[in-house]
Image 1: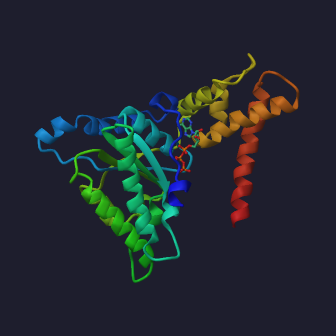
Image 2 (image 1 turned 90 degrees about the horizontal axis):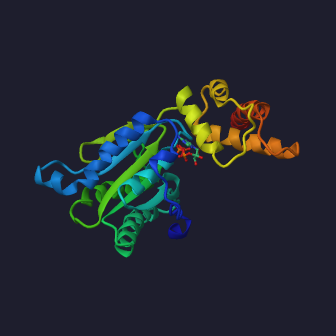
Image 3 (image 1 turned 60 degrees about the vertical axis):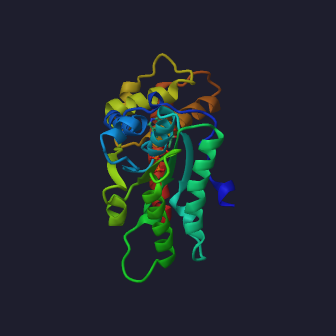
Length: 274
Ligand code: ATP
């Protein structure tokens, strides 16, 4: 079942150009990935290979997009899972799923004739949370299996495996995951600044007809504190308002209305969880 549930990343290849803003994070990630690409040189110099990259930052900032772009950049197969998929009532099931995930990555790389595989685990904190006291024994087995798999990554040379994990709660992670040789590269994926927000809006406006009165600079200013996912929603909602009014082009006021709607939506979501 875990095999079926697992997202495969889809057939579309995503590039770094399709990620708005995040200039520093993209640069740092590309530099880290060059370690995977220049594997032979790195081995000759005796440099410890890179096994894990941790992406940290608020929800919806593009961490998943980054991992997908990383797979494209390094010509790797992309296998994704979420930490919550490993949580089960029965002891050992989570650990088995971790094993399957790595096996799946190796098999797919072999089948698709790729030198490397990128495994992406979103919400790593769900399985990699701090181990305290006697509780969470099931999670312990899952985490132990993950550590074992990571330690084994370079015992076989082909395919090379790189684990990319994401969390918005880095301080919750067990220190075993942060030790050298595990997730020793951390990249912060922050909320976008105004320039980043404009870039993201432009990317999501690409397939949409905009009226000449649209000023994305202003929309970027009005959407202070929005994540990439929220900005994508703003564009989408604006197109829906446009359709409702029977118009063919998105106008500035549709975008302003959408900003309010997305902001309100977030507030209602938050209230409903209290
Ligand atoms: P979470 O922590 O909730 O898993 P995430 O950081 O992994 O979030 P993504 O899943 O990568 O966020 O982003 C969700 C959607 O938001 C993307 O599919 C995309 O449409 C949009 N998005 C987010 N960030 C960006 C960005 N920097 N550029 C363009 N689109 C973005």
